[in-house]
Amino acid sequence: MGTIYEWTFFLALGLLAIVVTIFVFAVSLLGRALETASREQEKTTKEQKETTEKEIAAIQKQISDLGKKGRIDKEKLKELEKKLKQLRKQEEKFEKKLGRIGKTPELLTVKGGVVPCGGCLLAALVLTSTAWYLSTIENLIWALDVPIWILGLAAIGYTISRIYQCLRVIESVAITSEEAALARETKALKGALVEFEEGKKPKLRLALADKKFPLRVRADSESSFKLNLDLVKGELAEYVDVHVCLPPGFGFPNEETSTLPSNHDYPNYIVMIWHEDRIIPPLYYWRNITFKSPSTKGSYSIIFYKFCRGFAASPEEGEVIVE
Image (cartoon, rainbow, N blue to C red; front, top):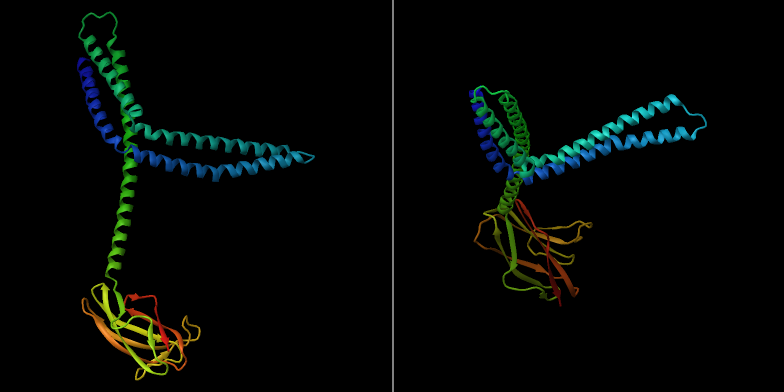
């Protein structure tokens, strides 16, 4: 028996080293375990409310309705009370489940993990070494070594079961953490891709080159201004169109024009289009725009739209004063 006691002693010693290693790692997962337990409790509570509370309330109402009647159906009442009792038991199971979930993170703490396991293993070391020592004594009146060894073996068995529970918690938390990390990485990757695509999208800039708004022109006369166009974001802009829009009464001599519909934000405005196949930075592109003003004096709006493949800007507005 001495050899068995010796093996048992070294088994307890080896487990003590494993316990220390496991709980050094477990401490780093404690925060995640608490978060997981909180989510599980919330989920279980929601399930409990959905599956039991409504049914219990409905049964209680039926029992109350039976009591209000002049004649009570005892069989029906007995059936409802039995069903209510079953639901109460189910509710107790939910409460116990909530308690187990709340205690799960304790397995990763010093109080819930290290102390019970370490204490049991230290006791097992003492008990197995005592049994080992007693087995060497000849003519011992009472065979105390076997019961002491059994106690030490029970302590080792309890420790192994506790370590197993702790490893299950670590496994579940590690899987959850891995899934959460994957979700975060996926979200970050999507964000980076969106940012990359946004960075590649072209952005055009339009500005007057030789004048400033408001443009002052004479009534019933031709005037011109120079527009500069360049690319401020992106590597290339293709199929570029700049729409220059003026109110009814204005015109663009020697230009092909169109008219905006009456239900447009700028109804019946006259439109001419400046087209470029492509624009490459840092080059500036320019065009002289000639227009004819109406005979009616006043303040008018001139509208600019910028379009290209993958880009459409909000309209820009300037003022034209006809004197």
